[in-house]
Every structure is written in C-alpha cells, then in structure tokens.
Amino acid sequence: MSFREHARAQATACAALGSPFMSRMLSILAEKLAPGSAVADRLLNWPADRLGPDAAALRLTGALHYLVLSGQAPMLARLYEKPDAATDSQLWRIVDAAMRLHGAEILQTLERAPQTNELRRSAVLIATAHWLSARFKLPLVLSELGSAAGLNLLWDSYTLEIGESRFGAKDRSVLLTPAWSGDLPEPVIPVIRARAGVDLNPLDPGSDRLRLLAYIWPDQPARLENTIRALDLAQERRPEIARANAIDWLEARLARPIPQAIHLVYHTITWQYFSPEDQARGLAMLARAGSRCRADEPLAHLSMEDDGNGPGAALTLHLWPEDRRFDLGRADFHGRWVDWKAPAP
Image 1 (tube, rainbow, N blue to C red):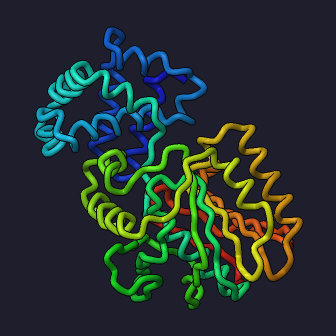
Image 2 (image 1 turned 180 degrees about the vertical axis):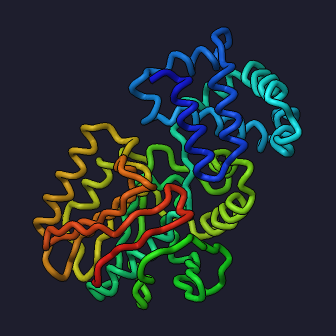
C-alpha cells in the first residue's frame, strides 16, 4: 500500500466516523501530495507495511491541528473555522503552505503515535465493570495499557446515559451517550480499590493538553468539549501512569494475584501499536498469571480492538481462573455506539 492509498482509506474511515472535513482534506492530500518538501518526502517514503499500524495519515492530521490549536498557523486556523468556504484548490494551497512553513514541527509530530485518549470508549469500560462486579461481587484493581493522559482510567467519574437509564457518576459533567443496543449494564455499583496505567509517552493533562486535543477532529466540537472536561478532571485526580513498555510494566503488575479483588487488565484500540513479539509475550504472560489465580482473586483481560470483522471493534473478555472467553459484542472505534451482547453474569 502506498501513502496515497492509505490516505484515501483513512478518508473513508473519517467520513464513516463523522468527520467530513478530515475526509475531504485527506482525499485532496492523497491526490495532490507530491515529492519536494520534507513533510511530503517523509510521508511518501513511509514503509508500506507500517502505514496502517503507524496511522501515518492521522499523525499528519494531528500535526496540522496542533498548529491551529497552538496559534502557530493563522491561515490554517481560518480554514479550520470555515472549511466549507474554501474550494478544494484553496484548501490544498493552505495545507501545502503550512506543511512547508512548519515542516520541522510537523516532522517531530510524525514521529509520535496518535494519542486520542478517546474517552467515549469508557462506555464499554463502565458496562464491563458492572458485569464483572455483578459476577464476582469483589472490588476492582485497574491496569490500563496505553493510557495517554489517563482519561479512560477515570471511567467511574463519567455518566453513561442510555435512554432514561444512567450509570456511573451522578453529576453528568462528562456525559457518554452512545447509541446502545442489547441489554442494559448490570444494576450494581463497581468499587475500585486501585488504578494505574502505562504508556510509552504519557501525556500530562495540563501541559500536554493541546497535543492530545490535536488528535480530535476539528469538526467535532461536542467531542472536543467533553474531552476538555475530562482533562480538567484528570488534571485534578492525577491517575498514576508509568512511562514504560506496556508489556514490561504488565509483567510486574501480574507478578502475583491480588487477593479479594478483580484485576482488570484492559486496552482500547492500543494493541495494534505493540510489536508482534510484545503481543505474544503479553498474551502468554496473562495466561500464566491466570493459571495461578484462585476464585477469590480473578484476573480479567478486556480487549476492545479491531479484529478486521467490523463494524467497529470486537469486545472480548478473557477470565481466569476458569480460563473462559466471552464475546461482549462490538463497539464503534470512537464509542459512538455499542452493541452489547454480554451473557448473564
């Protein structure tokens, strides 16, 4: 796959995920991008087998949005305010000029994996925690892989609203309203004993705020505002996030079972960024740790990841000591909808 093909595929995905502006921009970029500038040469020579795993097109859109949010590119900012007012040729001239003028800044951002920290995925985490709490009647210890700024470590501070039913926090300052199909979450209140996460590049919810917001598409203002409220909460709560290789960190977390608690290890659209070696090591590590568990110290592994079977991501829960795998359904990659199919706990 070439970068042009990758950008077109990402444009299609952006359209499906509710961002017509990013879809249009990437379609134009796929057509117009030509060698001759540092940014274009980097993109066009991206290793073909890494374009998808590295999310190269999203790295570029994040870099451009960061220039807007940080006030470095006024002309680009005006385009982002009223994208429909620009013709395709005008849009391309502005984007091309920004890539040439701010090439050094963009090249730095292209070296970093996108970190959206999409908090709407917490709808799945809330439902899973309710299901586990109903099944085991034990408190939870959370271990998140790929935590970014820790927004999805704070899911118990968000309100999940499904029709007239609400789950989670009462204040509704961070409100999740996915289109929901299937049974409602179990009517229990999860108790969290401890929480921690890991990321190769943790983001500070204060000083790194613009870096994170840059990966939220600019034509989705409600999503942006909800994320800002969650960042305010993370800045206040400061969940523990280690800077480390996720699987190395997990090895220490799994060193011994946690008595009288459910140890929930989870990741949401993160696994694809791990090397095949780390993926294999992580799964083997979880299986070994699970084999050591007793009934009063269960281990749970929740995966919300792209399995290629669409729509959206597969929701898979593996439980030990029973060594059982549960299909919990599917969810939109950005948490806009959830098709919940969990069995009775």
